[in-house]
Length: 310
Image (cartoon, rainbow, N blue to C red; front, top):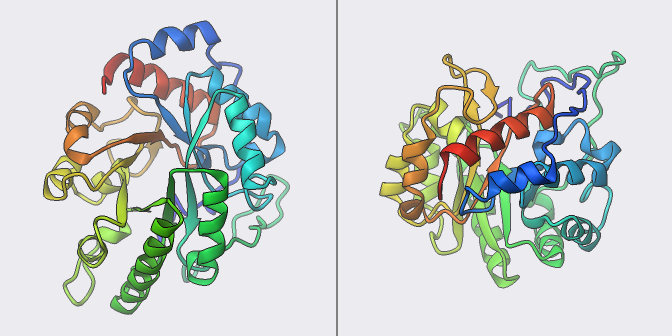
């Protein structure tokens, strides 16, 4: 299992809430320069959102973001709420809840890994999380109840051919159920899916070829694909229209540390220029375990508003 994204496991340091949230007026001036609404993946706020869900969403809206993709909550479910409750809260703040992340299989620590400690020195406690392997229909039904457009598998085991085949079976089953429920199902990558297995197979290639392109789309995490040595534009050209969702984050020169959009080494302009080829409908800014989540999303918004025109 790839850690950094799935690594809400790596560090839980205390996050300092930023006072640098853009004013509504400033956010409006930025958004006037952007044709497409900008979304944010709420995993960015994993360490802070559960203590003040409405306050967190209010600051996200004030920073100029318009769309949300939800993820994992320490409270369980939808940040301690039912799907319709969360949707009502988001909508009341001017935010459109577009997508929700779920696990593909039960969460497991990688071999040899230890649970990180919280600031008080105690091991981090991860709440029970439902997954598609065991709870597929419930997760589909809840997402449909919440009225999201997309249900996304955040990760699933792909480290061996056995794991990969089992995961594809679950994904295909979920894609059928999601389609019946009026949802669009998608798969979110890390870099692990691009690592060649001993059989010579690249898992991501099989995830594309062994699933129905009409029933399972892809959410391309641009940074993880680039870390794996892939060019997102090439993937779009090879699979046109299959990437309605993107995760947008930046990387440092060593491709080891995640940074706010525009503060690293990724050239986003040619990627966004290929949005039509990709079939992109929504993109979500994400920063895995930032020291200051609000400062990060503000920095990303400032870059996007000045440099991205989609």
